[in-house]
Length: 161
Image (cartoon, rainbow, N blue to C red; front, side, top):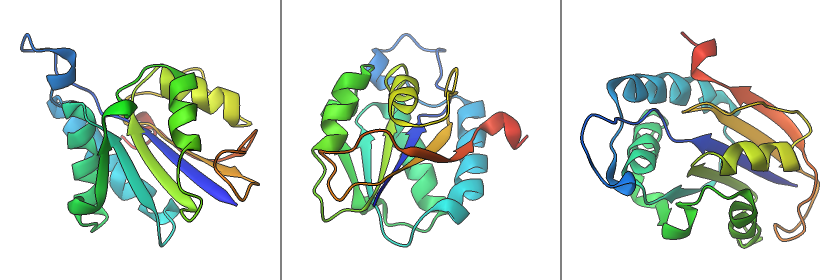
C-alpha cells in the first residue's frame, strides 16, 4: 500500500510585483496553513517523506506544517520539478518515488493537484483550494505502478473556519 497526501500551497500574496516563483504567502494563507496543519495531523502516518515545490509560497506552507506537526524542517526535500502546474508531470515525479517510502506528502500547485486528484482518486473534486489537503491510498507495492486509488481524507480551509 502507498499513501499520497497532496497539499496545495496556501493563499499567496499579489501585493508586490514579483516573479511567480518568489510570491510569499498572504496573511490569510498563513492562517489557513495553521488551521489545516493542525486539523490533518490526525490523518498523518507515523513515517512519511515530504517533497515540496521550490516556489516560496509552497516552501512557506510546508514550513508551517512542519512546525505544527513537530517535524524537523531539515527533512523536507525541496524539488524544483514540483514547481509544475501539469498533472502529467506531477504524476511522473510521484511515480519516481523510492518504493521504500510508503507515505509521501507533496506540497505543490494547481492545476496539477486538482487534475491529479481527479485522475488518480475515486472522488471528483471540482477544485482543490489553496491549502487544500487530499490523501489517496493506492493498492500498490510500487509508486511507478500506482493507478486509481481511494480518496481517503479531504480537508479544506473553508471547512475549518
